[in-house]
Image 1 (spheres, one colour):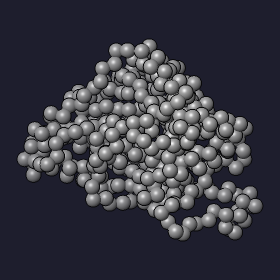
Image 2: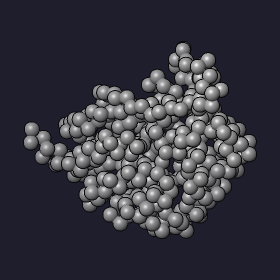
Image 3: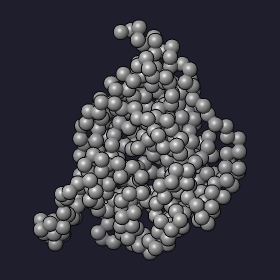
Image 4: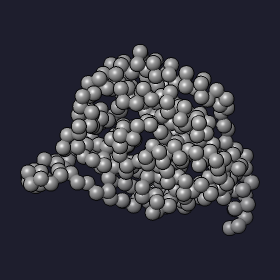
Length: 357
């Protein structure tokens, strides 16, 4: 049974101080204490959208263990509210907190399509897969209205440029026409995040994401349209979803997934505080067990920042996870062949587009 003070609909259960700011707003001020005593929720946060105008949109990824060279994020912050999200800490660079601020203060890059087209037309740019959502989900709820991601995909199609997408939102099916067209020229790979088959776990772990049923249906429709899709079971959280590896691999393989990948949860930055508070309010009976097993994966700590092992973990618990995934891959994805996206078409289509101006 969840405590009454559980902040339903949000992953983070509190605002967290930004380490870069000297002054902070105290949630326990007299007014909010008055609201709480009157029976009103202490933090009934509404999502707000803040327009920003960056000068560049395609980012070079220098981390050697994330599997991408360039990323593009049309939004900063993410309303999906996944409590484990490593990207929460990046919100501090924008002057916000990594807790509720991350999922309620969404920065919108409305000029992203213009910046991308400028990049794709540049004489210096040589085609290399660009990943949408390297930091935050490009199909979070506001995309339904703003359609920034759809405009970006249309540009990738126009310039015949390879693109990858990481998402856990069924809204991606809205753009199936563009995705299937990209797939015909081997220009697209979708990484669909499915961390659990248990809907109750999904509700508390990823409160504003698409349901598991919708994500499985999304996988089926992407497969039917010829769009190659890999499942990301990321992260694996010991004693929460670690027991679902084989079942999830089987269900997604049946629906046409090409492959499955994973990461082991790591609580970087202030995530240790956010995640611990979340456990206290949602799974208090499992709190100590979960934190202990996470620490087992990171040499006694809740985080390990060392490239190469930070997302895979070490030790007995991590080894068990790795072994289960090896079994899952041999049993359900034995015929997998790595897909190399087409980087050869862009140069000629870039020239065609330039001649139009």
